[in-house]
Image (cartoon, rainbow, N blue to C red):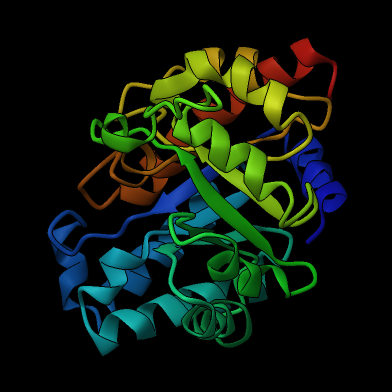
Length: 277
């Protein structure tokens, strides 16, 4: 999927919502635990309920890897279900990989060839040669960690280089633009750092930003849109817990759909205000 196709889906659905599939066996409705694959069953119901309102899904790999081979099986079934039933949806592997080049090549092969994701989140710490293997795949994306929403982000991301005066996350944004283009490189910018989005847009005006932290983590959707939206929207705003765990009862899918629709309606208004729909 290229940038224009992604923007077309945003316009079609009046939404830039990404639903995070952070599926935890301890949080899903108890009756699902009797299914042969409770994780996939939960995901399938969530996807069917939220697909009219979401342009992207983002499974967090830790929730699947923690279950061993069964978790990988659930993940593969989830990806195949989306591809078969909602081929227009953008699929993100929230894997946060980042290793030396030959290892990154194998990670890229796993997520883009074996599992057929559109994008994978990548940590930039090891530099260009650890990221480039992911960028070799036409029509696929790297989503590079730039400014994250967790408290520990301040430990390193705001360190200032004495020579250039740049903060570390600013250096990541500037340097990485030499590796890819707005057609294959996005950035993670946490919603709890929304006040920085105006400054970030000066550095990366044309790239899409994946913005976690809206909803349960306290980020403001309106502030994110006001500071971060560009002429192709340029945002994928993720919500996980606030949607998929809207209910812990038999009506969990219905409640998830309602929660997703509520977010989508606010996004529609924000897109209209920008003149994008």
